[in-house]
Image (tube, rainbow, N blue to C red; front, side, top):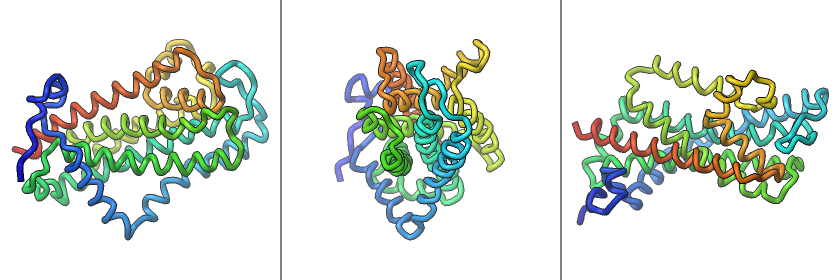
Length: 275
């Protein structure tokens, strides 16, 4: 079989991603994961219910006592409508992180899955794209399921809500790429305490349950620089129909985060799997 050319010979893109990235070969990794999970699909399904329970208990339960909060345009909106977009973003983040950290770490260091795969024409860059692609598929499934809940419950004010799932997919790609890049430096299961140390505060303090305007100015600026807030604010803007020119910044931020993560994980896997 004729091997794919090195991306380094294909122009500017090769200088960014100096390992081979083949679309068809990456899809083989996605297909492998589909075969594995077809007999344990409940593992994937379970990840959808945590944010749903938060929506029912916090968004509707506590929201019934809170009433309304300030929306993106300064108007008052129901608390459930405020929380729902944030939980959609959180569901996508959790799905991407689960696949790109713990599951990827186990396959890399214990199952030694990729040692066997590299005996085929699949290259380290293909592994990176394939595993990130699978993590994004899982996260998108959560996002789509949560979107159905939002539509059924009427938790939206604009037809732009249909763009929330593509945004959740982009958010998932960003977290999957960066999460997998970080995982390549981890050496034991104890290192995943650091993942929880990052993910949990992001979930609690990124404007998920209350506006970040309640923070002191330095803390508010810090929160606005975090990736989950970027996704939450963008999806909330789409759900409520409050779109401003500055909204495009969220997209630029998440695209840049995705490319940086993919760049790092491609180089790291090339080093780890070829040594």
